[in-house]
Length: 68
Figure 1 (cartoon, rainbow, N blue to C red):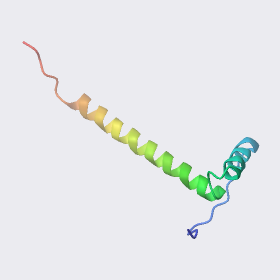
Figure 2 (spheres, rainbow, N blue to C red; figure 1 turned 45 degrees about the vertical axis):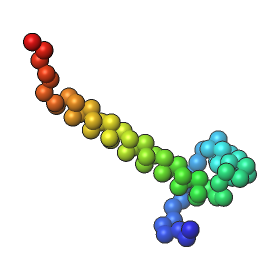
Figure 3 (cartoon, rainbow, N blue to C red; figure 1 turned 120 degrees about the vertical axis):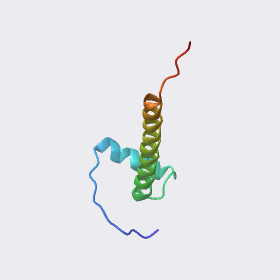
Figure 4 (cartoon, rainbow, N blue to C red; figure 1 turned 90 degrees about the horizontal axis):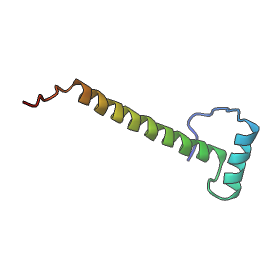
């Protein structure tokens, strides 16, 4: 996939080693591929949280049934 936007990121030594190890194991073809996978997971996590928050807000705002 051709990059549409280029970014420079700085990683700590331990994160850089982690990325290098995962690439060396063949889990990812490049650091860019690994970062894209991580960002997709963060987006999914954010969407899940938003859905859960929306569900919780709807439950709180729903009138409670009174038992006789």
